[in-house]
Length: 123
Image (cartoon, rainbow, N blue to C red; front, side, top):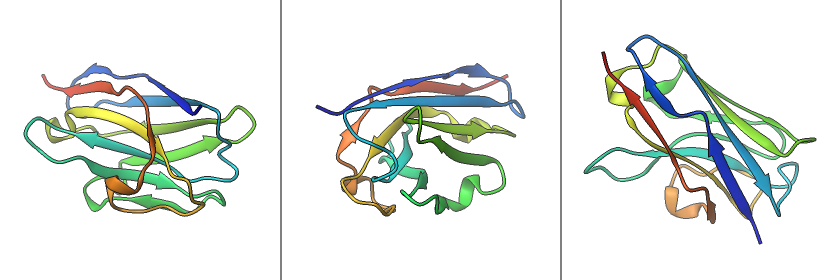
């Protein structure tokens, strides 16, 4: 059974930073891709960032230069470093894995999801 547990969300002012963590059990990140996805109220889920089994990165255009995804294969944990946060980054953030080595830009291609962590950017 695959389990993912996110942590690190919270309230931050515009321009601030947060680091999200995702601890994974039941699946190894050196064989599978993992992504960070988000869903804002009234909007569809979107893939924000993803890292493939061999370290190839994907970031959606709206976060390029501000967010960085990384992973620790030994501890089977993924991270999302978020800098220069904007109010429009406010959403529930989920980590999710694929049963495949490569990333995908559609949220429906991700099989196992964490419970989500709220990120609120507001002054």
